[in-house]
Amino acid sequence: MPRVSNIDILRKREQPTLSIRTRTKVEDLPVLIGESYGKMAVYLKELGEFLSDVPYVAYHNMDMQNLDVEIGFPVSKALPEKGEIQSDSIPEGNVVFCMYRGPYREMVSTYNEMANWIEENGLKPVGTVYECYYNGPEYPESELLTMIVMPITLASG
Image (cartoon, rainbow, N blue to C red; front, side, top):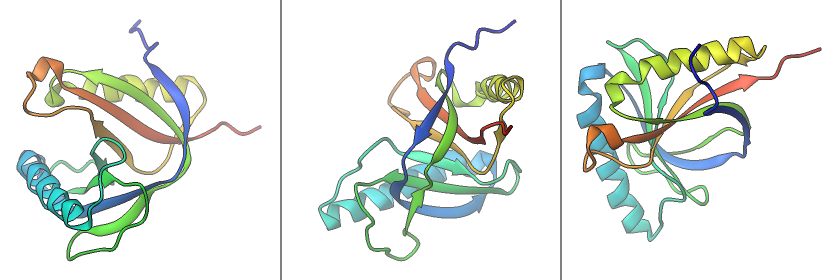
């Protein structure tokens, strides 16, 4: 039986964001993420604003050849939009989360473990899955730290 002590439930508050939402193939995602973070960093500097938490990618579907992704920065308040950079928010709600350390391409087993944990605990996944990145390509793959966040509904009655 896999050890799942690192999976837990949290109630998240609504989080204002700046983001770029687009569609892409999974193999094009790393370059797209880098370019998008770069554009948003320049825009934040223009505004004199800062990140309020770590960058994220939201997955609105899991079609690896036509991913609907939102590449974003958490910010302290709603900010004006500019071109493809949208002002949005991560909604408030209950989530299941797990800290993952290691290569991005090997995260699928953690996703499966989380899905099993959700089912075993009588919960239901709803909505968009988020990956929050605590470090990046400047680190060895074995040291990459990602929080996976899955919105859920609590079991009723």
